[in-house]
Image 1 (tube, helix red, strand yellow):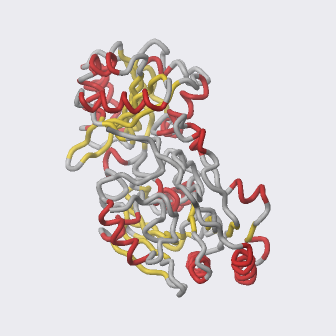
Image 2: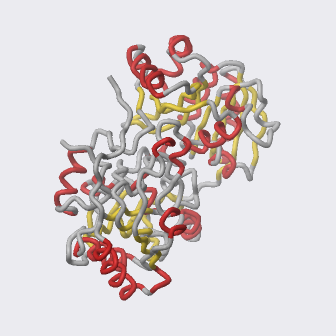
Image 3: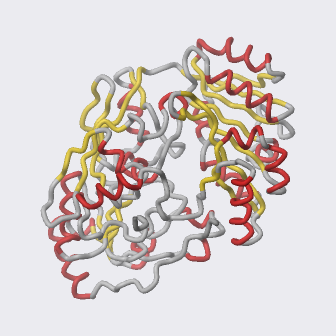
Length: 446
């Protein structure tokens, strides 16, 4: 039986004298403008979009930072991490972007280390780009394009930073071709260990997958070198269908285009109806299939849509950015703005498609969103199921019922790590966080 996350019990309070001493050291190292202890600064550094979850919202704020620091570069990130260790103060690293599940909330207070000012892009080489943790994806993609390349994977929130995305994300635009961020994307990470010595460790692939989607518990990401691909001329293709199954079949045909699309997304009509402003390329009473495809593949994509009974409603040269904003958890945000009574579950897409009647019977008033994603050697679907929220026990009973109907469900309403790489994360945490100061409360015991 599944159970919801709970707040930690008695959380030790960092003595005021310890916080004062840490603050003095941080100010000495980085200057007063890089350190905040005011209420507004502390609260801002302790919140994210976890309020979108009706399970987590009543527990917010889960914890509030005692002090916040903004190092200017990777070396500064290592120094701030070492200072936290010297004073034995819990440290929660954060990037810039959208966190949806409380990953960066400092449940035990202490120091929040915001990496967003460490923005330097160091190098673009053939197949890779290297930058400090605070470099944004807007800047990274621009730098890559200047060298005829593009990022292999970038999040739907393109203003996010590379360190924050790696620590909290899993995939995004580009994942249909390249998979999750832990499947070859991370060439090297520069990781600050939470020890008294300020030092950056170069952690290669695949060892560095212990830091991917680990919320900083296995080492503070100070910089990254990630994969690039040759740049492609992309365009946005919009298509409409009468039903889910033919739309999904057409999407699977798009997976096989000569150039794998950068993104393929699908929404049932009820989701499309929540999008504002209305877009004539997405009729509100139809299933919407959208793809970022290579310009040269538009004829083949159009034929695939028609072969499965759909209609191409528009091909829009300036549309890829819009399609990215209608993908992944951006959809949750858009849906709940208009229908706040709904919440979402993350599911494997095949079950949502081929067991749709059982899903509808198990979870009434449900709506399906799908994303194309490389799963192992083959592309497939991952998805979100939107459902009416009644109360927490009913939501978790619904998850159990879906599993009984052979629909794989991943609980998004938790800040506790629960993926299948936890043993690797725990091993890295022993090396890079021997005293357990990094983002405590997020890594479950073995």
